[in-house]
Image 1 (cartoon, helix red, strand yellow):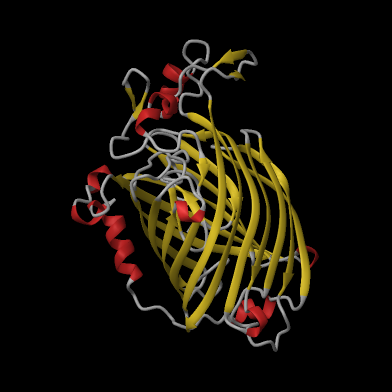
Image 2 (spheres, rainbow, N blue to C red):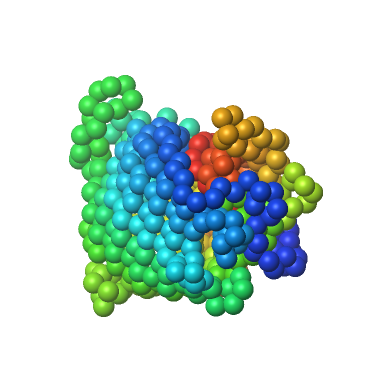
Length: 433
């Protein structure tokens, strides 16, 4: 783990090409004007089960002689999404992303969404989270042993011990302004209303088809020591800065992406809580030779006291918010939110080998083999990752898979991650780093 972190840090400081202009190959194949791409959303993750739905995109790339045609993946992207899964997760969204507003270097991103998760994970929070532990304090080495010996014991009464439910309607908007070439300032806000429901005493259907009453969950047992058990408003304002020299953001081969975000939730914004979060990330993309790309990321996030438990497991990057540690965007061999703390640090390394492409019916599909390693740790104090990193305590996983890039801008991944506890599968959209 220490070697992975040092290699990642060293490679990140190697000078990158500063220009953000698209490559000649990308420009040659980029469409002009408006066009639609619609696709069914069929995916699978170990956490959420089989997902299904639909997403319809409307793109405007502008014309080849437009000012920003060679510097942006598109001028406008609008999509509408309906999505739900067999394990109780739903995410419906209307999303707008506009580069170069009125010919300027300002970009606006906004979304109106409804999110619901019936089986959200909760394994506790803070440095005390180490092994899988049952209600009596017994520790388990693997998730399969934990499941067979505890979760399903007593006729499934403990089956939802690490689960809870939430619903969250939300709206967010970000304004991105490029100050000087490759450096942008970002500001925005979000409005969230979270409703929490415990599984304690609720009826559910077990894997054997019978109906059961759930016993007390870990969330109920620890409710006296956590914030946000009853949910509430978490309206926030955000500000950040990004340095971006990637050659093509949806599927980069070269460049840096370095960002810092400050996220403030306050009663002055109509929230029920007062807290703040700082998140820093650095990504580096290196084309080792023409078909092979090395992608690297180091990340750090810290939240203040008073953060509700359901908002703590987040890396608030400027491009997106990802759950961690654990899940298909952070530690890909662990369940989502397996390790959560006020301070979290993470490093990822990924090799992407281009295997070839096909163009049936004028559609372009590029295939890439993937190998990755992820590692991360949680802390109770903001300075500990630097002052007392505890490398031996880091949680590490590794794996591989396949990436399919459709018409340059749509990325579909197939990951298989392995950790000391369990394995995870993800068939989803976009690169993780």
